Amino acid sequence: MLMNKKGLRILLLVCIVLPIVIFITQIDFIAVFQELMKIGSKFIIILLITFIAYLFGTIAWWVCLGPQRNELSLWELFGVRQIGETVGLYNPSSVVGGDMLKTEMLKSYLISDDNAAASVVISRVTAVLSQLCLFILSLCWLLVTSSDQLPIFWLYAVLVAVTLSLALKILFFYLLNKKRIRNVEMGDRTGLWKRIRSTISNLVHETQYFFQHKRSLFWWSYFFFFLHWVVGSMEFYFILRFLGFDVWLMQGVLLDMGVIAIKSIGAFVPGQIGVEEIGNKVVLAAIGIQAATVWITVSILRRARQLCWILIGAVWYILIRKDISKVFRHGNPVRQS
Image 1 (tube, rainbow, N blue to C red):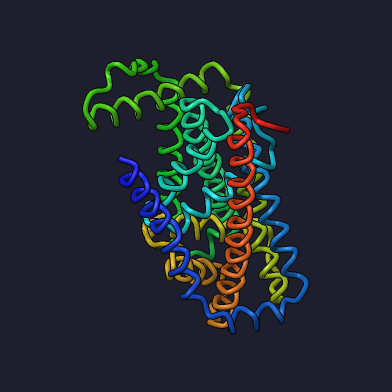
Image 2 (image 1 turned 120 degrees about the vertical axis):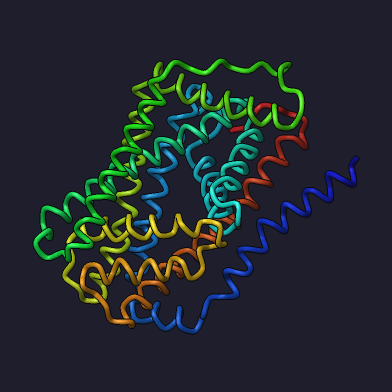
């Protein structure tokens, strides 16, 4: 039994590390270095922007933990989130694998199993809903400012995208407002399929309960995730400004939302290698920037930023593991300050 657990841990570690290694080996470090030399110290601004965006995302998740948020500091949660998001981005299981890792890591901070899983799911819901809101706003802005310049095909495509996004958002809120599904007791969980169904049912129940009884916390999480997406979109804005393009902030938002939509199609590809680059090319062409050198430069700089955060996530993981090991080595189940 012990050997099986050890083998499972090794397999899990390989599944996490291997996609990241593949991603890193696909990077042209010479090209990255050359582009970083051109940008110079301005690259720090890009890292600062993403740090602020990730911090807003962490606060949005921290809110969803309820009273148990006091079991760990905001910076510890930042580390947990960064590790989980990195695994989700570079693992074939996408956000599912990353969110599962977040849940497991939260348990190490004495967050209850149910609250850990529920907070991850609830924060994912508020993240998606706020993202849909920003996506709709950016498309509406495009229609208002450029509808007369868009080809008829793209005009209809934007209208369809707005309609589908609105419908999806309405469906989400309808399900959240619905009468809650009965919480399935642990004793009812017999068999793998029934355990999976009961787990999903309970998570849906917790999300509905949170929305219906803790609306202020739900909307605070929604608000901070909205800021997370807005600030994150500024990466495109500043990169294009550094390259000499006179772009608007809303164009940066539109570009980022467009790339995220395209990346979601290839979410199973570790690191979205190739998918993100195609997304960059498509969205830049949509605002009239078609030079190959530009989208290649943008792609390289965004990949360089990802490499930096992979390194930061790895260091944070080592520090978190050491901190957790200290607590349990001393036989003290209570989190130390």
